Length: 374
Ligand SMILES: *Cc1c(COP(=O)(O)O)cnc(C)c1O
Image (cartoon, rainbow, N blue to C red; front, side):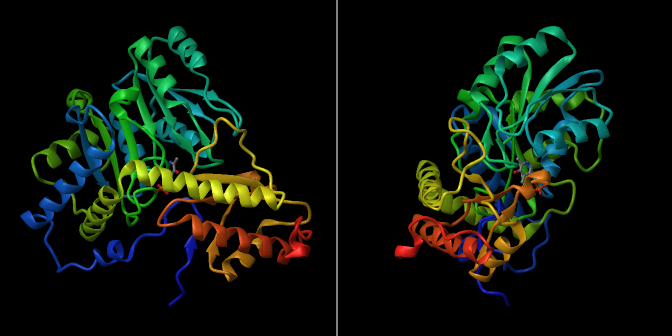
């Protein structure tokens, strides 16, 4: 058995022992009330976390990684002939485009570089010029870099034009403030194993009941990833397929722990972990890729300093018990990522900074400023 790693990758994140132990249940048939009770508690707990107007929203849980819920939403929502406007300022925006194209759904891409948030007035313009674009799909937190898109302003643009808003909040739900009712989100998508601190294997959509009900007439493009059918079955206390039974037990435990900590406190803890990391990294001379003003408090992309490449840095950190994450795609050559989701604390983040200081030197970098005096 490996030791306990501190996971600084953006999910799966570190969990509590109680969440991991919740996986060990008596063998259970998924058609028995003992399972459905847990499923319904999870659905209710998710809606509760999504903010105001929760009586108008309903949660639909899929067995599958986060992308399953993204694909279920994108292939279930547009009616025949309707198009989707997709914000692409990172890998996850681009993945939504790929999913839509795979289902032959018309897609228009609003493309930015990876450090520029979406501009709501460009969303206005796109909707004005194409009446067939009925939906906007955007990643709230682009995990590619740690960039936040302005969900509330984008929602306002959707409202002005009577369009629906689909938000991939995979890596931000439970870690950055989102309020589906107040912000005006029609479909919010996330998974169990990022800021919720659950086990991988479940993803979900929290959607307006009225929007879900309206999907009934749309001919299905997928059998498994059929959002309306999944919702109907779950509403009726049923499930169309075999769910990841034990992962639901772990999610229920993770949601109980979230309730005990409090969502606002969870968000604050993550922000404090992030502050400690960034302050420590700044003292080591590390620069942050994403400009101030659109950075999340969940993940930071740092530029690799002169003479340091990613692999030796990764292994030096791993030898110290920390798993960092490469920059995405071409960024790997010039940057690396540190996420601060999961059961981390500011004290752990101070240890991360110490490990980073040693590892940068071990990976061939210069002695950071101040270290000679230590
Ligand atoms: C993690 C993530 C996903 C989905 O990833 P899976 O590997 O399918 O769980 C989608 N979007 C964003 C923004 C993510 O961070």
